[in-house]
Image (tube, rainbow, N blue to C red; front, side):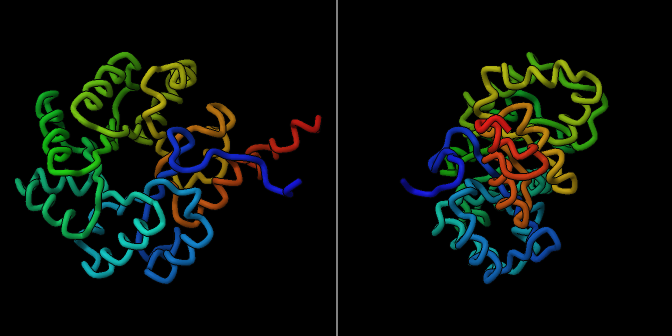
Length: 259
């Protein structure tokens, strides 16, 4: 018998997805080329996506971004640019210029968000379809950075279905929106996993509330919940939480032994 850790699903995953956020050389994980190679050597099997933070795709030296993108792709991790980059390109009326740049970097996926800008339904779907037609895998993010009221599950469900029908591959639920919903209506928050679209959605966590918040989400929605915004230095420990290892999940790995 092989002595092995508690089991977990393997790539390619449809559930239990971990989307890392790459802040660049940062306190949340030094993801220069050498640091990223070290991270991939240990954690690549546990990371499905890696988001290039905010405007790093145009702030960091292009060669550095390309090198990181190549490392991700060589390790079966899908890199994508964050929604803030798309919103910035929209405001500058340079969406196709941005798409050209992302393509030149070798990034195969991108996030379209409405954190600060607002799209009409048809406009949103057109942008998703356009990026998809350009060959990108699209992740649509629902939610504002500063929401004023909790969202309605049915209304958001319709928006998510529309985005998926337009070509979106996954959907991310903005952390701020989830915080407001959980605080205002814990019962509604608990119903997230009952929604037909939940399997395609990633819950955005707060790296500054790791591991307590992430352990709570795993205890509430299960080890195979999809999670986004996981800092580089947190990916390995998150994998442990998924397997029931750690105080944040009360060492759930021991429950089957009656402990």
